[in-house]
Length: 333
Image (cartoon, rainbow, N blue to C red; front, side):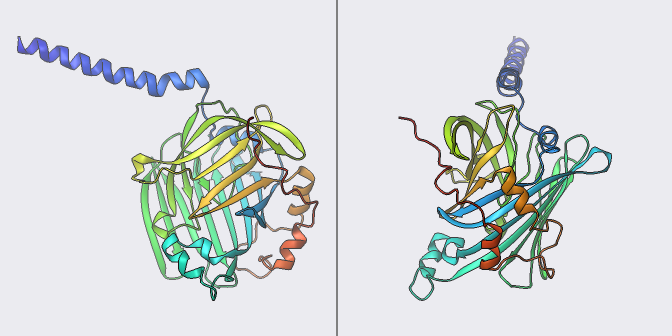
């Protein structure tokens, strides 16, 4: 008699686990489509050309970014990015408890310029192979290097700065899309409301032991956005901390606005850093080409001629028509 009830219990547990598998893993892709992958992104970007961005820090124009996807041998893809931030308030780059000190009269005008670069290598099957991200603050000679190498189902993540080295290994889900908080995506094809995917994110401006954060992206809805002088409907993707990765915070880490297929362009992205918010606003194709003609994406940070970080140089790179206040999401009535 006891064996019969044991068999029934085993069958019941199996049915329950299979029900969860079908509901959580099988039905969503069938119902709303597969989320974006490196393969679909690489295909969408191959004929795109360079993409430029205007940067705002707490709604103040503060710099630019440029990214480009380059086809490589054997149908692999390299994605390069460069970001410049001009005179970021030091108080905005530290935790809240320390920011109070830097808001004192003698410190409140302290600002820093920063340059960052990143390289992602995608193999012919649309899988991440490795990435490298660098950050240089002002004229300091030391450059912070963050590197990632995919080994099986794990990501080996390393930070190097001078003699300091930090290394960790984290699981790499098969659907994960590696991201750099200072390097926005340019296209996300195939989006549907309700889709979810994992986003391991490099945060060069965060705490060193949280420089790699696991986020969960979700397409939460649609809303109108004013971009390039026109009101357009965009899909809204929100990035949340992954509770399973041990994060206790539940505030969004960022958002992005994507035009529906077949366009699939990301026209705006926001990222949270401590108590501040950085916004990327996509440039037009003409503006992007102009910026690309003046920026050396291949030049490593810290090398002579590779640092366009002076205020005057930054203003020259952005000597284009002012597009502030034409990119805000429009509230529904």
